[in-house]
Picture (cartoon, rainbow, N blue to C red):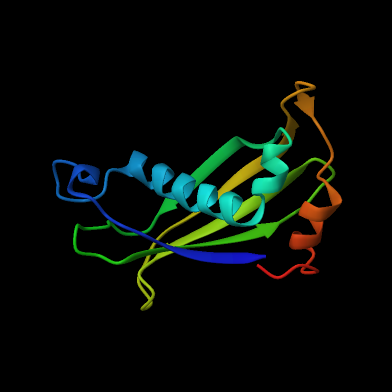
Length: 132
């Protein structure tokens, strides 16, 4: 599964050096991830299933400036029984890479209050049986 989405850089995202603050990169990843979930998995989420971040990391390659175009590509890897990994590439679409990141996600049943197996319809998207 792969999704690419554009993120708008706001003036308030910048630090004193005129670059996007390092913590804001995680907000950009969250924005892309939420868009993916809304587009692909809203029905599952309406049933009380949540996909929680349990680990996040980011390797910064170069600063993002106010006038930069920012795209985020999300892909999946290492799909387990109840967890999976999203990988992210933050770039401008023309060969400039700003960062790469990853989040370990778990499938969580809100009603039962515990981690559960990834549902078959969600897994089908990972396996490429359902187009993104």
